[in-house]
Image (cartoon, rainbow, N blue to C red; front, side):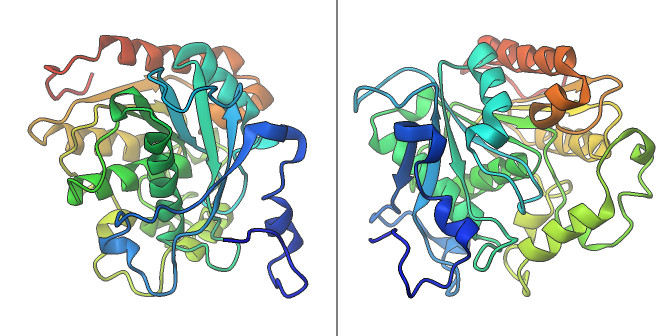
Length: 319
């Protein structure tokens, strides 16, 4: 598959240059779709097909093809409409993960809904491709943590739901970390929903931004995919233990708690909920710039502590 731009390529310059190495050098890799039959169910959309995924390694690519060290597969936030997994957008999040969660991180730049061909299920296809890539490199599922902030947190939820619905396609990862996850994308098609939230005045999210993302992400027909777009009241069984971190002053706080509570009621699920008081949305992305670095560090420490407590016999709970 040729990923180089050509004179016949009508894709925007922004899209094309995002696949070049850039400042990341050999830390930036191209992940080709798997030839195995791993794209099934909701991933059989006739208009959205698996594509090459660009991704950045932190702090460096693994040296050996077979590697049993713990690795985080992290999906960035941005309402599915902006940002990438590169140093400029995700370097701060990568540092938090490296300091408190695992020694190696891979951050894909999944397709964005602000560009043609980026609606659902494009990002989920890219997540499946990226996860399979780690398995192909020799990382066992027991050493892979899937993680995401905001829209990236929603992407982790959709990935785990997909793996749960299609058991046997791919093994379940060892843990899932959701940082201020965007739980109900479909609800944000309603203009003004953010401004009516009780935490609107203590957060920076706004309806124009979430509406932009939701409008581009949600397909024209939601038949058979509704549970992937709206998760609070649609829990599912998962073999992957979940940690959900939220800010006490953020717009998504109540949705995060509702989702954690509903998921914990499914027998066999292991769910841990943590709330950092008095902070806005997604400090993994914004903590450094909004003056909440100490709080962002604390949230990351809590995620690391959760991972340290994990055991196969852990029972479902929300603490």
